[in-house]
Length: 211
Length: 343
Image (tube, rainbow over all chains, first blue to last red; front, side):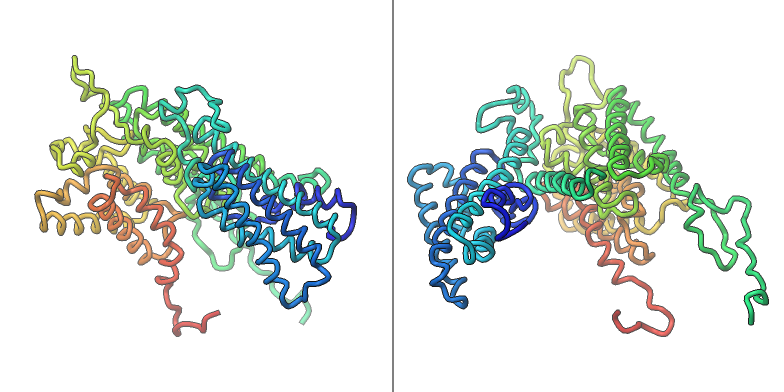
């Protein structure tokens, strides 16, 4: 990935595909594994992280000429904590059920390494537009990865998609749903398979289609 | 001294049948070694042979279900093996070593007879794909593939995995009951348990091919006598279970069954001889194998006596698989002259 090179769109696309925070950088594993047992949780978590990373990158980039290098981590953390608190309270006010399901994982966005990584790698040294492009790319990439896991786990584990039944009712009633997919092992198994597929595609690309 | 003066090394004397299969490229010889002719394929063939009586008994007990279930796990295992080889660009040679067949049969024997065949198929796929192929194939896996497949099914389909069909010979005419409690489940709830003779012969409810302690013992002893299986793991398992059960029974005979019940019920005998003796998951050191077996036995009893599950062979084996590297470190023999400083 070229931080500082290429267009803003390249920076955005890198976050979604070639430098996807979850599937390529393997960052932010904690929410990835913990809240992807349904698509709804995954989407809300993705939206919360996108909001925080966009605002954090925006503020950090605006302040980048004022921040002394030795206090930058403190500034990052305070900025992130502020917006995580906002996101947490907004979720509790408007989406109480989902907020309860996500539990501690919304406050824990503060320590999500994706966000502090983007502040350190991009926002502290790039223009506002470049930082925003990067933040949207990373947020979308994170949401996309979580949603892929959520789709697989919700369909196999509960036979539904966004709470709408997609498989025959008998599937769940007769115990044919893959209970393991709703449970933590299902998160590890699904993530492992998805990362394996992504690595396979990347190695094919790297070797010019010869796997 | 020029090269010409060195007497040519005697070529490795080709014994009558020196190289098992087509592994000649690995052959590095100096002293005249004996080639025992023991290949992976041969070992797996003997294991399958030892399981034939159990399969015949399973067919007697569950008729077509036994055949269908075994075919389903075998299909899952073999297809996944083919697919894994294809993805990794390897030859399909690993198919003919028979290890996937053994995994499939052991998995099938450990499943409830009434399990839908497609679930058994998934178990076979998971066993080979997640427990064997992703680690690099035969010999690289940390855990026993059949037990991983079963553990996956156990968590995935909890209801179907604890539904035990009444074996055909035990069905009473005019009685509609199609499921029954296994002896271990009955014992865990202090209900009546079958007669000891039924338990030992295996004419009770339970997993497809594990109920008969007698036939597992015969097959197992055959493997031990043929030196295919080491005697140390089975001995360790049986000793640990017997001691543990004897103590528990002594403490409270009303609550805990005796050693004979525990030795002949569930998957114990089959697990001790066929699963704990797996070459890959168990330690390579002789003392380590005894410890491994003893650990399996103790864990089985801990789970049976104190745990939520009535049977613990699967978890015991998986846990001891995880401890195998540690056991090997403990039991590595000290070379002559004492330990070398830690490398």
